[in-house]
Length: 271
Image (cartoon, rainbow, N blue to C red):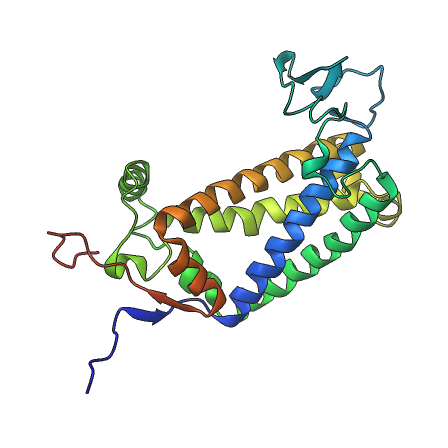
């Protein structure tokens, strides 16, 4: 009889996979529709007030056919990428927005619908992660992993593209855990709360939202920063998937089954 394939393990449970793909789709739609909403007023402020004459800490604009990005007083030319691209004088070009033409009401409809998908999905997943102990068993750092020496070793391995192999690939590595906990415990909650704080209806029902962010314009800035951070997370995440072996990683997120990469020569089976 053939020997069992001990390298093939069931690593990703169904609720995790369902949330992953639902969350991924919702985030992409919200980022793209959010960029169209931002195009309506491509300036960010701190405080309760924000209008064209007020000082903006962040702006994407154009001088004729020359695009620019200004952040904290520093202006960066962005022609062809932001401000003015694809013959359009918008902060974000139509290639990356929903819809692909300027339509603020439609962009808001897309954004608000998938905001509910994202928010409810986050609540359901957090409930599952706590009840199933997925949060404690798979995402929380072990005492040994939380040591600075261990984290520094993991950072150096990733910098050299020495990704975990063999038994070490059976579980999330420390940097993965920190990134996932940051998204679950900080990025998504901050984005959801700051989004709610921009709603006059929610502000009337929960006045503490405006106090939490020190004004609606500050909430808009926090919302934009969180969205940018999540977009960066997605870029890094997809890069690591490609480097780790996209077919194996995709199989894990579609079927749950993952093949442990073979140990490096001379590793002696050590994790």
